[in-house]
Length: 496
Image 1 (cartoon, rainbow, N blue to C red):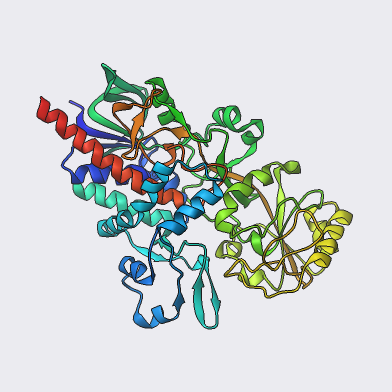
Image 2 (cartoon, one colour; image 1 turned 120 degrees about the vertical axis):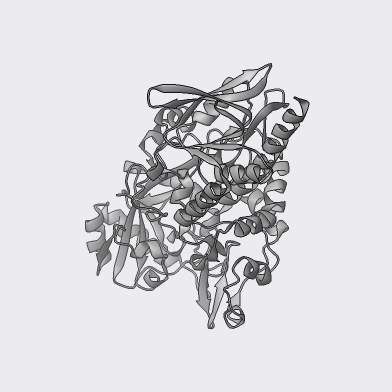
C-alpha cells in the first residue's frame, strides 16, 4: 500500500528541509521529484548558494563556519545584520508590502534554521562576492556574507544524502497532478509515473514544487505577454503544478501575481537551466560599477540606486522592456578587475575594444547615441570618494536617469560590453499560508493537511527582493511545514 504520514511534492531546498524536519518528528515521509534523478533539486540546484540570515556579529558567522581562524577573523570587517536590518531591507525593497507576519517568521527563525542546516551537515562559506578588500581587510556589505559550499549543487547533495540516511523515500519521475480530499481534508495525492496514475495516501501533503516560471502560458497570463520571451534560469519542471492543485481544492491566492524575481543574465544563456552546468553561472550582477545601455544607445535605469542585492531582482524586467529584450553592461578598465567571478567564466559573452566607437560597432547599437550617452554621463559625474563597500553618494547631476552611487567616468580603455537579457527565477505570487506553512482557503481558514513552502509561499516578496532571501525562506518555511505536518499526522494516528 502507498501509505505515508507526510508526502512532500518537490525536491529542492524547501522540500527537503520539510521532509527532513518531518522525519525528525517520527513521520513516514515520501518525497516526489517530477524530474529524473539526474535533474533533481529544482531551482535550488542552480543557485549560487547565497543565503540571507539575521546575525549579530562575526562570532555568529564563525559558529556556522568554524574553519575561520582567529587570524583571518582579525582581517574581516562584518557589520551587524540583525532582525531590524533584515526586516527594514525587506520592507524597503517591497515598498512595505511584505506580509508582516510572514516576514517576522522568516527573519526571526532565520538563524536557528541555518544553525539546524549546519547540524544536518550543510557546509557554509564566506560569500566573498559580497565584499571588497580595503586597507588590507575584507569588508563585507549588503547583509549577505554567507553561501553554501559548492553552491546549490553542494546544498542539494547534502540534503539528499541526509534524507537517504534518515530513511526518507524518494520517488523520481513522479509528477503530482491532483490532491485527494475527504470532507475538505487532504488525504493524499495522485501522481503520474509515465503513463501510470498512482494514488498515495497521506495525513499531510507539503507542496514545495516551485512557482510557474517555466510555464509560458501562466507567465503570459499573469506577468504579461512579453514574459514569454524570458529565459528560465532554473529547472524546466517548475510549471505551477503545486499552485494549480492547491487552487483546485480551494486555496487562496496571495501575493503579487503580476510580479517576479528576474535578473540580467547572459544573452546567450540556455533557454532553461542546464543541469550539466550547475551554479548560477550566467548571471551578470556587477552592473552598479558600470552602465546599462540598450540597443538604441540609451541608459534606462539608475545603476547605482542601491547595492546590487536590492536592485538586481527588479532590473531584469527593465531589460526585458528594452528593444530586442536586450541590453549591455558596459565597463572600462578601471573597474574591470572588480567585477564578480561570473564575468571571468568561459561562458561569459562579451565585447572588448580600445575605443568607444569600436565597442559600439561590436555591440551593433546606435553608435552616435551611444557616444552621446557616454559623453553626457561622463560630464555629469561628480567628484567624490569612490567606495564600493558603502553607498558612497558619488553620483551624477543633470542627467536622467541619474547614477546615485559609484559613478566613475567611463574613459579608461580598454572597454567591455556584456550583452544581457532577462532571466526569470520565480514568480512572487503564490498561496496564502499561516506562519506554520499551513495553506489557507479563500475564507482565510486552514485547509487541514495541506502545507506549502519555498517559491509557493505568496506575500513575502513584492516588486523586488533582497538577495539570498529565497533560500532562507525555503528553509524556514520548509522546516516549519515539515514539523507541523508531522505533528498533524501524529494527532490523526492518536484519534484512530
